[in-house]
Length: 271
Image (cartoon, rainbow, N blue to C red; front, side, top):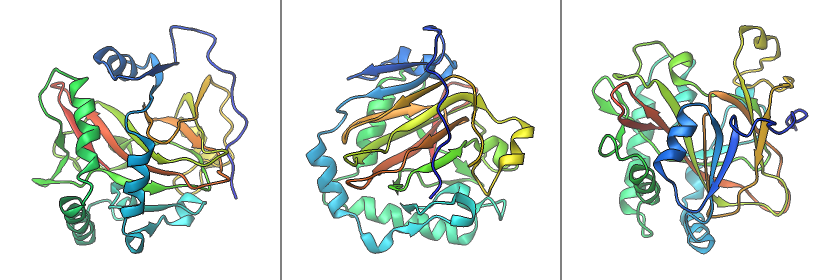
């Protein structure tokens, strides 16, 4: 099992890479995060833990798919297609669109409603500049958003940046900022914290690369750690290196989607 490397010291500058803790997401929170001042926003009790537990119980367990361990090193599972998994092809294949159609059908028929929409409405209320968020578009087709992920074994240091990882023409409209939203549906008794470093990718980092992760990289830059509870949400910029500590005493399920801000200030979403 791969575990995250040693943590860097917490930020010593209260005006840079700080952690926002709140019960209500606000415009200034997202602006601070998009501007690179805040390192993470921790929204407490966005949903009740009991509601989250009921949703996990309703998940079709047979439809959870494993991440490719050659690219991700630790056992991780997901529901709903992920654009990054089609990186080797460099494009979204027919299989992607088949998976997207099946996952969207689940949300339409889910007896507990579309949890994605509830989360997105909270983000939209905190970004009153551009109307409703819209799914990202590839060749005129809206992509899937709102994956469920189980990573109870943790995650090595890695970063996510769609405009760097894919050819320039993948998305019909490219974002200029990429954030990520995570709603934690279940959390273990121990472990499962997310550490985010202020460091972003440097070409020399690839000496540590294994698949889509950098398991032996030990960033020395400032870092912060967030340890949410079930029902909490955490937003951060995934272009920064981040890692998850292994769990014990329970499983770690989260609903996640990316938030892009385009040049006209609109929000675009994908997974």
